[in-house]
Length: 596
Image (cartoon, rainbow, N blue to C red; front, side, top):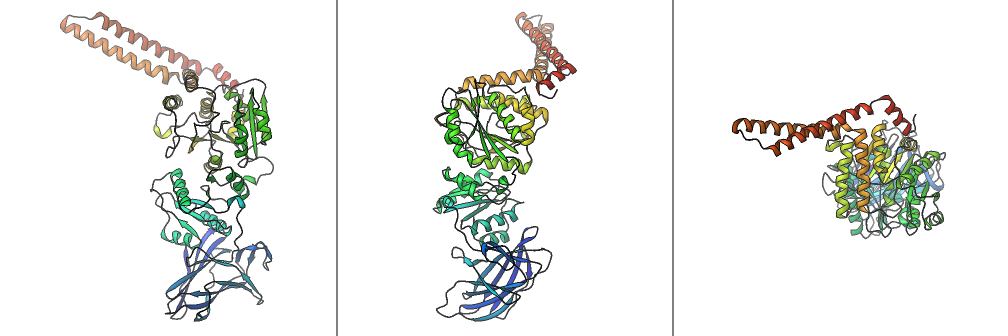
């Protein structure tokens, strides 16, 4: 933000004009008027808009003349403001100006100063006067008893489903300008806006500007608060203010598609993530396809499809040989249904989803469970993270941020073991490279990842397919990231595979892949350690025998067995490593990947 004019006026009134860039060719203009008189002062000021710039006004059709409609722009004229200012008070006029930010703007002029009459109301009157002297009345609005005035913007009624619903915004180091745009658009629609910040928070000038255009700034829980913590703080603030709900803006603060967001909020309890307008920009191919593998999920599939539909250009349900009415319920709810004549397993359903998404040319495929464990309201968080970071696979993780998922004890222990085994088999030996939730099925896949996975025949049909996909990503150098999510385990139609059998299935899959993919790591390293241990033990026993003349045969035999066993592991690892690097084995793997 920078001042473009110094104060001016007589001894009782001072006017200051400042600007804040909110886009490449757009800026927010703030004209502050301060009265130092002993009584209320009626002040009229004029702020000229040159031909190089245009005042953007909501509530009128686009065009210099302007007529009733959604929006208008005015240039080559001036904004005339008549307002009553209390003694020792300050009022601000805030409006959006389009035009080159490097051009200097004219100074406001004080047209009239007089003592305010006793019966004069405190409302601000804003008028546009063009170069020909024609005048047009604009709308000004005072927010929540503050002295800030948003001028030249008609306030439209919010969507009926979003009435009394707040918009929540998290400020970051790079999104301040876009966040200001979000606040302006939301306030024009009549929404309360709650803002908090990650890191150290915004500077005092930004806070003052946000409050000046009607936002409520909430202190973050801490400087290191995660995104989920910040959202919870905003949600708590909305509840304390008696609001009907809150829509969380995505991190980059793109314009919100309020129609689709309202449809999503209809199915939400209190919170929902905003759907960006950019999701509807592509007409040639679907932007977001949501895929649902389903097996005997008739009790829950319809609700899952209905809640998901607002976030997807198309919902595709793969009925994996169900014996109930899963397919019929999904079609009735509006999904596209692909039916497997026999049950092929979770991995088989995933492979069908990859092929269906690739056939449609989808930019994003989000896979969620059919039992209602995954919250569809978090789909925008996965997709927008993928767009912002350019990540091929985004995992909705139970272990990122503040944990709110209550995982059953047996499953929690099994997941911890499997997560460490999977990361070890992938060569992720440093914590910074760990995939913290390797078994989450809540994932978003980019268009590139969709095509790559659709051609991989090595992905298994069972529950170990989640791990197979990570191995595929490792081989093909696909990028993987995680975002915080919550999974509900108390749903009625939970996964049909038990925790123990699921875990054994995954461990078998991991051990098989490790054995053939990283034999030196899994067989060679333990073999070397065992050989070293046996050798040291044998040397110590011989040293003891040379000193005492006593040899313990059982201990010596155990030591020799350790040496022999370790050497066998090392030899096996080397042989498998050589075989894996042989051109014939490479061709076989390429054929399995569908690339041969």
